[in-house]
Image (cartoon, rainbow, N blue to C red; front, side, top):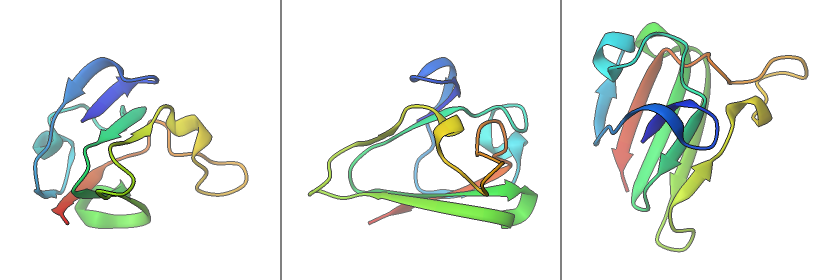
Length: 96
């Protein structure tokens, strides 16, 4: 599940396994995602640009880790001065 605000608040979309190359496919305006809840058994790969381009980051929620919560993407750095908040433009969700 992807949320527009930190701490799993605001507009939410739930994406099953698949490829989401742009905001239209994701179902949220571009660059508006601020928190993520990844159910166990899924891997999520986020990309800064459309069509899986630009910087990328991935998380896996396994049976061992359980659900994985990314409470606020301001805490997840791309570089020392840039974070992932409101920067996601494409997503891949993969069943583990």
